[in-house]
Image 1 (tube, one colour):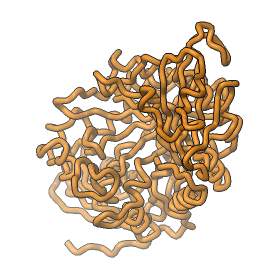
Image 2 (cartoon, one colour):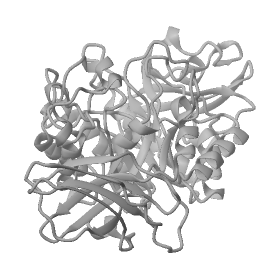
Image 3 (tube, one colour):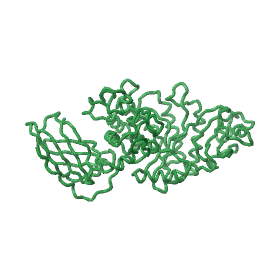
Image 4 (tube, helix red, strand yellow):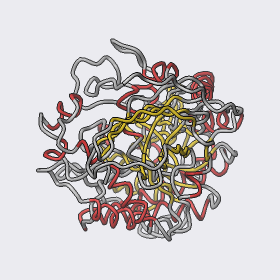
Length: 522
């Protein structure tokens, strides 16, 4: 059958095309210029949010304290402790240059030695304030930056403020247990809580800028409805309570991960929905943004449609789970987990985000990141985005290691910029009885659609039609991602067998054409 010419897209004013990812995990720099440039690059790309990881409050022995933290040639911890009874020693080596307001108690000291700067704090083991009622203290050595380095928190908050962006700073985190590596060490909960309080008080005094949008919970857990992770939920609740008390207008971000691999400690979408609700209930007055990791960068989650369930997993996922069909490797597609998560946060103050992983599973050849993850492609990232339509915001890991690194190919950022005008289709519905086709997705303005199907009588059909306008508010109207749009096409009443396949090719007003979309009726 000869193809009819593609009709020109609807002649309506077009806005600038955007990519749906608007936030990125980043590494902080000790230089103001580097932080400012990084955030400027992200804003130019279309991002408005950056998130940094936290640092562990790490138990150490007196012998393993930083060797450069010396006062008159003696260990800074020993000098600060003086005659006091010391229970335990800790480091918080975040590489930041802490200002004087972190020194809240008479015994706290700022130390500069051998070109490095530290803050040495005394944490009372009992009682309130600076004096321990039992005479026992813990010592925390924080910082470890070059003496001429910037305070990374202030640097990023200032840069975000100037660019009208949002910065979420990583919170102090407990170290991992030695016996069960995926659980936190809770043997020093009080010390962690007091240090977190001082951390937040410091941010309140030094960095209370509009760009400081809130804080990131560094400790991660899977979306599992299990009492195993109750200790982490308690940690979230404690730190959220402190945020709400000290900086009540700030938000928090937490990023649990999907574990959907069959044969592993996986959860069903229903169990994940319960787990999300438990996380939401730790908010304690804080707006808690739950950015679920989609697992496509680690192999723990699968981005596939129901029609692809029996198709082979993509080669990148196969590197983690082995060859086989999607349905033979995963409990359910990511879309089901995000739908369950949306139901889980309903009625709470929490907000569902997605953390779309911007890398591929195992790779020992990549020169980006730690070398154990591979560079992904725009096509694969687009596939991931189709699964997270329930998320109110989409962020990604990680700008420095993967989006902005070319390795042996083209940097992901450059791939996305080159393909920015391409539509991304997330859902299609075909009503033969009315002849209406509705297409949801991103960057659909001014689209025309080529549709192929075969009638129940066996007659091939091909039509190329203009969309009857774009509903730019579709996502907001349906509680989905606010960037989602909807277009409608009328092909006229027709017939099509249940289970029969039809296809669409969408070309938007910028001239971008999405990969051919196949679906089946019913």
